[in-house]
Image 1: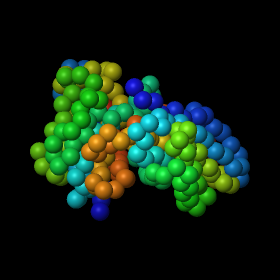
Image 2: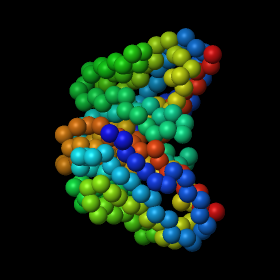
Image 3: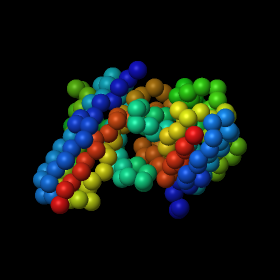
Image 4: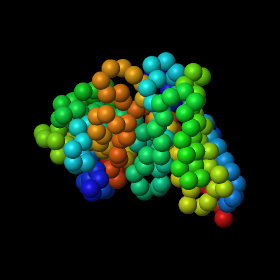
Length: 113
Length: 114
């Protein structure tokens, strides 16, 4: 298995632009998580899905952030409009119900100038 | 807000030294405690998952213990090597029905010097 795949690995954009981050979970996993890692707040959960349905989005910072999971093998995290304070590394992770492990992707480093 | 605290924040040791760090977490509604190893520019890699009070897990030179009643876990590294240099994250998983999300600590950054 290729593991959790994220794209792009690096994204540099200007303030006000729309940013879309992509994630492909491990095949067969039914849970998908989006995390954000910053120096100030560490690793924080933004939202997670079960069987493509958003379960808990209480960590999404504000309305500028949205996440979708149109099918079992693809999810997006969108920021519109982006702001410099959104600069962070965004991780996607997936898990299989009945197990305790979450498997992380390589992350997308976002820089908003 | 339920906090997971890790200490120390960073640690510098010499190759061959043994070391340990602490994770403290809320003991109410406890479900599981996870340890991850996170190397710079890579993704967090799962080390251990522990659920029972008194659990002890071991992987090579790394081991971990769990006390759910008082809400802490220790991670030990015996005979540290430069390749052990990484950030070690712990995460608490609380029981709240359904799938239980992880609450991460800020991590302990370990640097092992040759």
